[in-house]
Length: 192
Length: 192
Image (cartoon, rainbow over all chains, first blue to last red; front, side):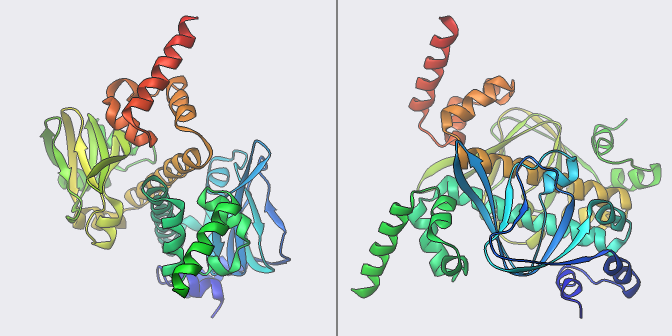
């Protein structure tokens, strides 16, 4: 089964005819690590399915590169506000590793909404993204960077292994040196 | 026109037949200020339309009451994760002023998803909530409490006038005394 159909079917069943229509609109793309898929200020024109790879969302503020979050395959992503409201994207999206993607252009993604399976999939996916965003917000409002990092370790979050320290630190809202100190402290606890 | 139909129609057109079905399932409710609509740990069983009034979402952490956000009428709200996943709510919802509500129970809200207008309305509403959550997250990651408060003043955010200082301070992640200092500083700038 096509990896994207398999992915959508985790949310809702896709009848053959509706899948054939979706499939005919997909574009395949392979990108190297460090590739900028979307640039802040530009219009986002696609919805992507990340079949394989790891991405980072980040913004530039006062010359500093700040990580908003990471996206790990398999996942469906876009710059939602830019895509929906046709306004310049407020974020950059870059690959942190070689990645495999399937994309749908804006018109196709909206055209597919007339199919019940796609409409339901999009609703459930946005809902899930909303839950994730709310969770990150709650963590930031209620926990220290150290607590959040320990939780990532405890839940076996793959990002801890795959993401360069500087990006992980900026995601946690601290300096790389502070994250190094937290790591050393935790290592010392484990050894004793 | 019913205020809830008027509200939904800001997102999508509601055919008469679909509205009649929605309307027949609505329950009207008036609550005083300070009323707890939902308690942390309990199951959220309703979707609400706030016709009039002001609400506050908050959590208890280490004996401290922390404000997550505010909801101003007219708006549609629920404790989304609790409602959808049938898990205990991770938040409290209270009225900050006398409020007028229309509610749909869980089964009714899900049953209505078979109607294209309700399905589309829910998708667009969740999308909007996602945008708001993402915006608050961005502000917290990138701005100081003072910058966020100044932005609220500049955009004429009604909350600044209506919400008690202690809740506004906890929403901004600072002590009430710090918010008082920021307010005095801004007042002094305005006078000079």
